[in-house]
Length: 102
Image 1 (tube, rainbow, N blue to C red):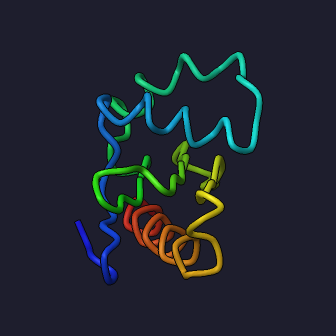
Image 2: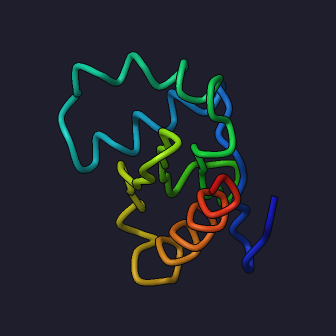
């Protein structure tokens, strides 16, 4: 877990899923594969990160690694917190975690 001002960055947990989905609704309609989020968190807990402020999820990022390729997807930052470095910090965090797997 790392901290940048009042924002905490950590691994997502299954308990975070409702808040993550609520944030995603700001940007995307429901996707058919969202039911896989719980499995992803359980399989790769270090590759699903959230940014929290005042107990609320304000950002998410998901990374993937298949022993050959690494990728980043489903990046979202709540509109009230955009342009404050949240996405940059999430990208840095997930990049470090993916690099550690190589």
